[in-house]
Length: 159
Picture: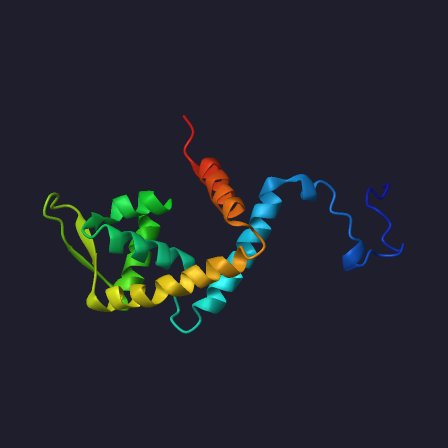
């Protein structure tokens, strides 16, 4: 049987001389690399408060929209409802969020920040701003706004 693999006994490329094939041309490749850097910096920034990017997004939405339902929050951050339940459970265990009976839909819960959640958000906002400033330090103001606009357009639902 013929061997259909390449002979790796030849000199192996070093990290600096790797051929990345089509990857440098792919938007998804660069977005994933950027996402990794963003999440690493976010984790370092939030090390003392133990908040993930997803949890911050949920807290920010609830802070600005007290009484929103879990379903509305899940749609806004783009996650499954079952995943949202786990996120809210974790935030509720930390006494940052409360579920209250919805005044308009008895089958739903209204989400509100606790006083601890409100205080934490006051602490998190400047941390997140500094995190964003570090990540975009090499961009001008218009470039930063353009990048956000392009990413928003890419993530918008089609149709």
